Image 1 (tube, rainbow, N blue to C red):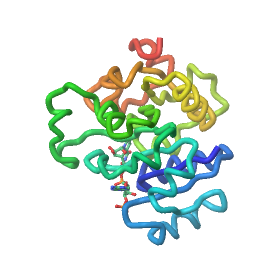
Image 2 (tube, helix red, strand yellow):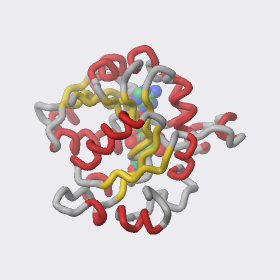
Image 3 (cartoon, helix red, strand yellow):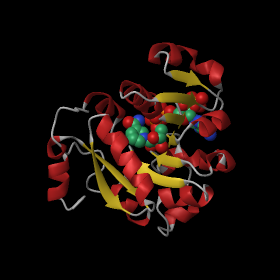
Image 4 (tube, rainbow, N blue to C red):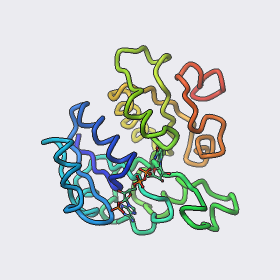
Length: 209
Ligand SMILES: NC(=O)c1ccc[n+]([C@@H]2O[C@H](COP(=O)([O-])OP(=O)(O)OC[C@H]3O[C@@H](n4cnc5c(N)ncnc54)[C@H](OP(=O)(O)O)[C@@H]3O)[C@@H](O)[C@H]2O)c1
């Protein structure tokens, strides 16, 4: 699969490495442009390329977005139309500025992103796991129940199935929290946020059952 990545920082670069190890091709992009990504691309090897944001969006069958949420309006909706978009972002008002729709509690941050990317299929994922744990805790030899959980949510069942498969390929267990509305269950104030939980432990907490 071709995977575009918008945001080549801690989460974007870590996920890129895991996707490449699983046999995928990745195109990384950031706000400063492809020239700033030379060292990272060297490190990731031949299956990685640096691109502009628009080109990385066009390249991906799946596009991972891992940027400060406050920047979401700059994402190219046209280039992302029709794509499965993984939303790894979290809302931190201190970093992102206060976003009125989120402050009022009417929307989850992924619903807000879906509103901006009207023609994309947004799946929330990778937002609850610290990047160092993402780098080190995947284990493809473990049975599903014993793997570290990566929580996902979305309104498109086929898109969720694709991301579930990708998560399983890199050694984690995808645990479904429901729709984009229900992705509140995996936002920063949720009980599972940033917790080291296996799929079995998540199920005992009422997740993914
Ligand atoms: N760190 C974690 O362990 C972790 C875990 C789960 C989820 N998250 C969430 O994932 C997102 C990214 O976090 P991070 O820790 O990976 O951040 P980070 O290390 O600071 O990296 C952010 C990346 O986003 C890029 N970027 C910033 N504004 C952009 C824009 N408008 N368009 C395209 N790229 C842009 C930056 O590019 P430049 O450097 O060129 O500006 C940088 O490559 C956040 O929403 C965070 O809450 C983080």
